[in-house]
Length: 220
Image (tube, rainbow, N blue to C red; front, side, top):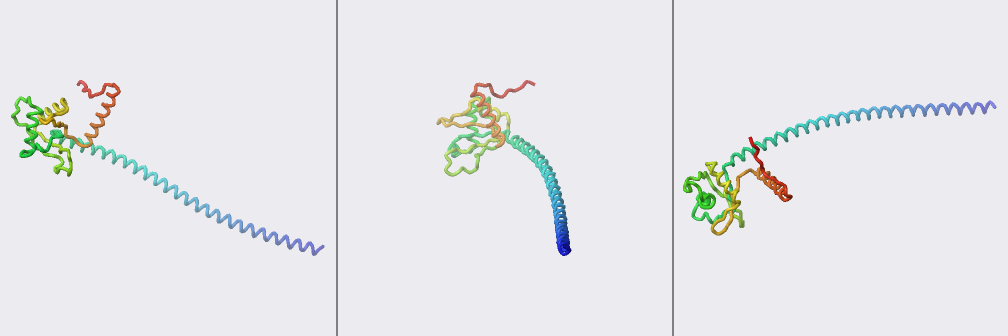
């Protein structure tokens, strides 16, 4: 009996030692886990801070980008306005055959077109048209091009330019002796020309649906 009790005590001590060892190992694992969790929490906090900093930076970049884009649009509009102002005395003659310049000059051809076809009823048909310069654009004719280059004409007298343009808008096109047709348009920047095409397209759209459309000048 005493021997049995002794064996039980020995086994109980062994169990206690094993449990203590298990508890110690478990505590060490928990301590390590807590350490890892603390490190992970620190890293998550750092990442969150970096993300917050990046969001702040991104917001600042978006604000700056928006401001720069707005300033760029303003500059482009001002540049476009300046370009159109510099072209306000210019006209483009489209469709004039280049053969007409044989033995002559572009300026003389334009003068004859204006005096004989565009404004034949001028008070002083032999008067000075104030043509500052006239030339084909582009300067070099493209190879194998079957279309005549546009003639760009700059007038020193804005009133003469407006008379020609007004007549061009009224008749839409002019005819040469051989029935060749040519047109006269305002000279404007690419952006302004694009806006004009959009506007004309919208006017045509409304007219197709029978809606009145056009430009109305308001009274002062």
